[in-house]
Length: 482
Image 1 (spheres, rainbow, N blue to C red):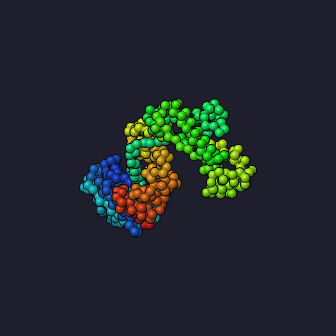
Image 2: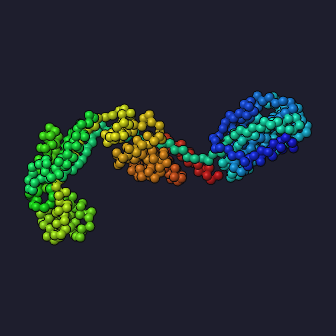
Image 3: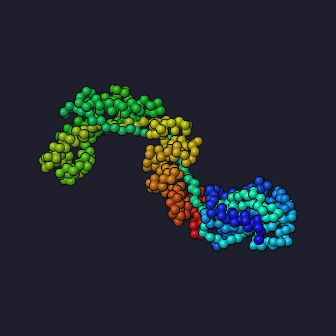
C-alpha cells in the first residue's frame, strides 16, 4: 500500500527475530522524535481472549516538512514472536493530501496532518496469545520522503513491558517487651579433691589448683566488668554414693561450707551474697552416666538406681549383685560425682545507644536484653547483612522466646532462607504477627491458598499489611490462571 512503509516494515520484522529487549519496567511519558513527541497514559489490559492497548500520543510539537511523513508503528514483541498493531502516519501537508487522494487509510491505520493535530488517542484490540504474557510493547519510528524513500533516521522506543505478577513481601517485625532488670548468670562445676573422709581444702592437693582457678576465673570475669553487679553466688556440693548416707551427708555439707569460706575470704563477699546447699549422694549424675553407657548390666543397674530402695541398701545391692560393673563405676565414675556446682548471678546495666549495643553484641551478647538487640537495628538498612544478623543473634541468645523467633523468621525470609524461617516459625507462637509471617512464608513457598488463609486471619486481627498481601496474592493467582 505504501512503498516506504512496506520496505520499512519488512526490514523491521527481520530485525525482530534478532533483537532482544533487556527486562525493564513499564515506561510512561516516553519521548520520541528527538524529544518533540511524547507517549503518555499507556494502558495495556489483558482480557479473556483479547489484548487492549491504549495510549495518548502527543504530536503537537512535531515539525514535519510538507513532502515528508513520520511513521509511528506499535509492535508487540516477545522473544521470537511479534505482532504489528495499527500504525500512525504524521504527514506534512503534501504527503497528507497525497494519502487522502491515493491511498485510503484502512485497518485502523491513523493518518494525521502535522501541525493540525495535538494528540492522538490511540486504541487497538488484538487476539491474545500466550507468548504475549512476557512481551514488550515498542514503537518503531521511521521517516519517509515524498517518493516513499526512507530517510535513514529510524528509532525505537519501549513503551511497556508485561511483567508476571509476583508477590513482594512486607515483613512485620515485633518490638520485644522491655526487660526492667537484666538478671544473668554463669554456671560451672569444680571437682575439688579432699583427703579421704575430710572436709578441709588443700589448694595444692592433686588437681585442686586447676579446679579452684576455674571458680576464681568465673567470678573474676563478672566481678571485673564495670557494667555488672554480682547479686549472689550459689554453691551446691555433692558426694558420691559409696559409704553410708549419713557420712556422705556430713562430707557434702562440710565440704560445701569449706568452699564457701574459701570464696568469702578471697573476695570478701557479704554472707548474704553466698548461698549454699548440698546433696549427700549424686544419684542423678550416676543415673545419667549409666544410661549413656553399654555396661553389661546397664538396664538392671538403672532399674536399681531409679527404684525407691533406701540409698545405703541400693548401693550395697549394686556392689554385691554386679561387682564387676560396680568396681568400674567406683574407679571411673564416682570421683566425678564428688563435685561442687556454682552459679554466679548478676545484674547488667541498661544500654540505650544503638551504636554501643552493636559493639557489645559482637563480643558479649549475653549482656543484652531482647529489646536492646531490637534497638540495635536502628539506623541499619532493613534486609542488610548486619540487620539480619542482629535478629539471628537475638534468637541464639533467647532461643525459646516467641518474639525472637518471629523476628528471626522474618530476617531469614528476607534473605531467602525459607528452611531456617520454617524452623523459627515453629517457635513463634500464635499471635497475629506470627500468623501474618506464616502467610508470608506460604506465599514465598508458592502455597497461595494457605497464604490467603493466613493473611485473611491476620487482617481480622488488625495487621494492616495483610490487606495488601491478600490483594497481591489475588493478582498473582489471577495472572497464573488467565
